[in-house]
Amino acid sequence: MLETRKLCGGWGPTLVVEDLSLTVAAGETVAIVGRNGVGKSTLLELIVGRAQWRSGGILLNGGDIAGLATHDRARQGLGYVPQSREVFPSLTVAEHLQVAARPGDWTAQRVLDLFPRLGERMASHGNQLSGGEQQMLAIARALLGNPRVLLMDEPFEGLAPIIVEHLVSSIRKIVQTSSLALLLVEQRVDIALDLSHRCIVVDRGRTVFEGASDALAGDDERIAGLMGLGH
Image (cartoon, rainbow, N blue to C red; front, side, top):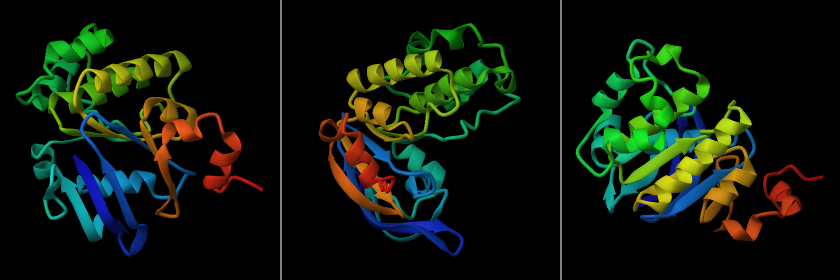
């Protein structure tokens, strides 16, 4: 469903991602993990068209989207939940959902069933929501675009444990009840491995490990070594 081929890019003259290739199949969750600053978020920004592409392919359902504008990539079926959530402070929850909606299986009622708290906050503006509520809204907004592929950048960052637990459960439901391909960047390696089928460890913009998440789960020493956190 999603594939990058020797993808290179970054910000201005700085090359952050180098020759990075990956695939995510329909119904599959792939986690990207690594230390801070190794290029994980930039990889997602390259895929959605916000960072500066240098070379390599970005294929969505077999078609190369590397030359498309961000909004055209969204129309092709790419959804994005950015690290900073990026909700509109002046729009209500209801307006966010209305603006984002496109025809498909994900409807406003379905996302409200997934996140009942949003249903209680429909008249609240984006800047009146808690961090957890903003994250729920960012995910709901992305789902209402009815993407084929969903990119999520550290969706649990800065949230209370009880909210993290709820979001983990919600993301699990999303992937279990749809054919959505999910590419997840997450600093919490334990959560990333628990949610994903496969894991890619990135260091300095390059892949240093790719394999089944089960193969790494619980092996803290190996994880630390792959991430450059060892001796």
